[in-house]
Image 1 (cartoon, rainbow, N blue to C red):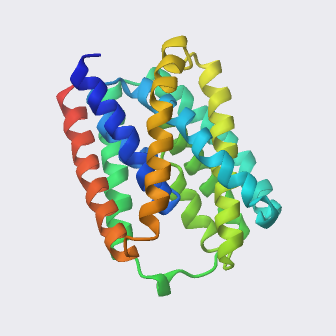
Image 2 (cartoon, rainbow, N blue to C red; image 1 turned 120 degrees about the horizontal axis):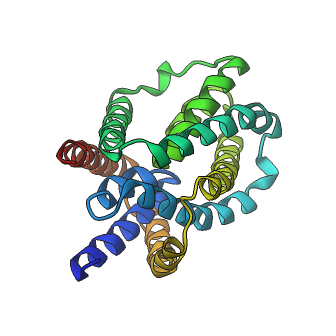
Length: 245
């Protein structure tokens, strides 16, 4: 990579994990649409996966007492199937089409967040764990963006905020471990990836620290609007990049 590519890479990692530090999610949805302009999708997604393991492990460990194990057990079987399917697709399908799909997905999630009303969220039955786990696993493996799918399911299953936060953190961590295995099997984890990840790690930690500081100072509505703007720009950029390949 050129010097400008390195600058884009490290800036994207810092920005993405600043968002993660502020909100607890969204790192892949911010970083991947930026990184695909300088890296292949099949390299960018595993790179963010390695960063996610670092970012989520501390959250998952600190909040493990509040994890609702029953929900994890319902989601994991279909999640694992989805991860295997997504990793297989990522290693075989032309990246242009996947980038367009990524852009559409990010824009759809942004639009949903913009128009969503909290009062509209109604409880759902546990049988929704099968499609939620499958879809979340596929999008996690393809783009690292399964978090919104898990959130939509668990937000309607766990009204207690502490239980919700702990369970989603544990689920994303377990998803990251599952994706690591799937990427290893499909040949997506290679030595240059780990070298790049080590280079990015200090900037990931810097972003997490900055995000935790900003979380106390930036009003939630402003943080939400900034995130939606970033996601929308990234989604449009991913579609443009996919169409240009």
